Length: 319
Image 1 (cartoon, one colour):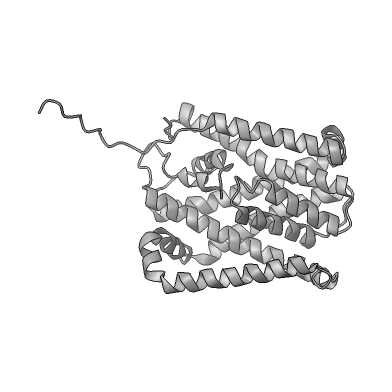
Image 2: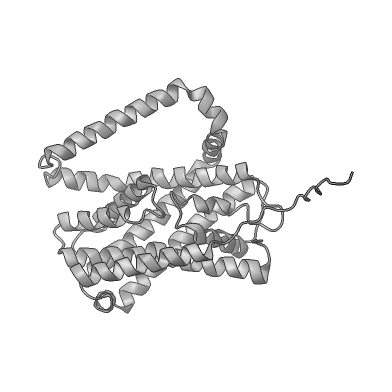
């Protein structure tokens, strides 16, 4: 019939690579980091010199171990959804998703399954695996936060906290209770709208010790990397305390819902280091180096893996 528009053919889901947005975010963050170091700390070159090659390589290797362990976890969950990859291909496809990490709540990483050129996941399946990743990460990060709670109690920080902070914490707990009560009251409606989250919980019930061990080991490795940076720059937190500081900062950054927790993670980590007795300039330098290795190294590797997968391996499709 004349005048009708042709129906587009169904094809694999494609994702537009936000190169300009990533470059803008990277440029702004690099400028902010450099300015903060120049104003309140040492120069970027001095901070890198303090870190040294040995500590830097060790810390970077532990961060790479984090990415690899979480990549294995993703590959196992993809197998549950009928997607089988070789070891290196699975890790490369997982790394490609890190290109989208600078998004609010890291939700951009949910496109990993949608980008596959052959048999891409549906939107719901991608959300299910993304939800399982975030729930597993949150659980293990909260466990790693426990040493900080013990440290804060022994140092009397909770007892010395100002009234406004205690009132804010109480208000937050009350608000959380109200939200949980409303969620329970309207649980049936939430299940209909957020059914993928329920499926994510079901995904976690399959061989739970495997994903738990991989996730805990991954975040512990990155926590040890933070401890190596602290030690190289003259800070004195122990391994468990430094790991706990990083875990608390990561949870705070996630709760802020800012892209990759930018701003919130840095402020919390710097504040905890200063509260532990680290000089403000050193604390800021530690935070910047930590974020370069634990966040921006992943984004850089993700961009390389994404471009390789799209242009050479051709197992990812982009618009």
